[in-house]
Amino acid sequence: VTGTLRYGAEVVENIGVRLKGEYTFRPLDRKSSFKLKFDEFVPGQEFHGLKRMTFNNTFEDPSWVAERLTYHTYRAAQLPAPRANSAWITVNGEAYGLYTNLETEDKRFLARWFADNGGNLYEERMSELVPGGEDAFELETNELVNDRSDLVGLITALDQASDATFMADLAGVLDLDAFLRYCAYEAVVWQWDGYCYTRFGPNNFRLYHEPTLGKFYFLPWGMDMSLKPYEQGLDVFDARGLLFQRCLASDACRASYRTALAAAADLVEGLDLPGRVDAWGAQVRPHVADDPRAEHDVGEFDATLATVREVAAGRVTDLRDQLAR
Image (tube, rainbow, N blue to C red; front, side):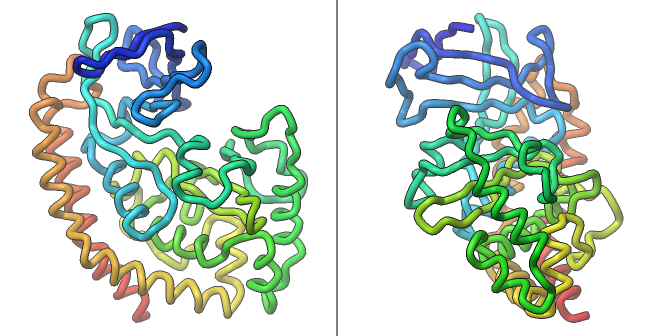
């Protein structure tokens, strides 16, 4: 629908507004998540250099900080990930409450991280990289052209790769170093609802094919379940995504992953993640209490925040203990 954005004294009119979400989708009479598109009706219109904004209702993150912390950690590792903060949203003058303001993964986002932002961006649909599976991914750029030969090339290379030459077989279609670091940071943030360590099928990632190098990169998305354990522990060598499984079945790739994990532990040790949890938790706590549409109360917020802090504080030791096995 057509809407108007007001941010302080700033006003942007005639923008596109729609509801978003899959499992977290809520209709407008509840706590909806929103996508804004500034150039939907006015060509070239933008807001502070953005063409789109995304506001998540944070239904699956009662701490209101875990998703932000995950993207912060990926960015600190120089891995492509959205910027994020917190926002208070009103709709037609009515308070809708506290949200995560998440940078949309669009061409503006891609231009900040890659030499060429004109490639194909795919969103998973609980889809795996198997022969014939390319059409299950949702193409988010270049939709009218709909040329998926790049994704077919990645799937074919993975299908035909041997364990002995796995890294060389994938080198022409995938930035394997970036992928191994991507998985390492899924381990850092205990992301059991993503790709590398998924418990319920491939989820919460995007694939970008960068045209200059002709290689694929994984992008994190939907990280609201991170830093909140689903099981007692996370075995960092229990690969679930097919690409990651194939990597760990290769001696050379497994050794490279161990190196990536060790480097991740070293970097995270200097990030003071528990301090971030404390600071951002204090920032949002008064707004949690005031949120009229929240599906979690302050008691759940405090308990989840404590869990997130405990997990964040223990990640470096846990990773190093597992690497020492």
